Length: 255
Image 1 (cartoon, rainbow, N blue to C red):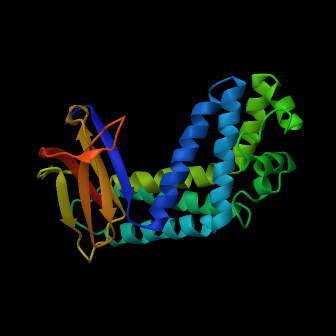
Image 2 (cartoon, one colour; image 1 turned 45 degrees about the horizontal axis):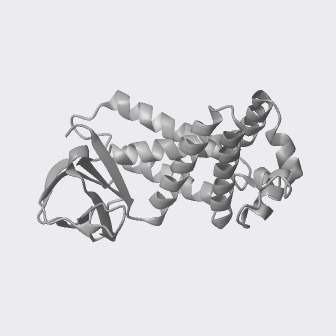
């Protein structure tokens, strides 16, 4: 298929967190390239969202475990006939470099950001609708009026602490997405059911739909099986399951 829209659905909490982090890192990267104050606000919001995720669990430990899991699994297939050893060694070195960079960070990734008084002042007002207005946060308003170069320098300094996590997240999701080839599938009357192999638990489901299909998927299920319902969008009412057969590509990332 050409002109595909890719939909992804995580099948465990670790991948779910990585996908959320990737989304926020991409959002920040986009707004860092824009000079206006509203983009600086959006970049700050993305940064605060990442800080919020980091306060809920030990992300460094979770990501390190995932890096170690990949290193172990790749080591097991090293002697498999037909494996590109040079490419495999390159991936292994990349995994080890990311583990080393994470170990160099403080005990908790983002600890300095969580203790930053300026960012904390914004966090405290962000729970209030419209709470980051100029009259609520004059220091923030002052910062937003500074030249774009000065704001960008501050944003890059804050983001620098998260860079090892961003690179590890990007690597892990890239390896996960590339671990399995896609298959062409058909959903009869907009419904598709799939049972996963118990011996090789899937991490992530990726669905590719043609732009011309005029439907979107809703995925439900867990690590043993899942179902996909394809709904026809309705911008003025409730989306309903299509009665048409839908062709799509499917990847169950199992590595």
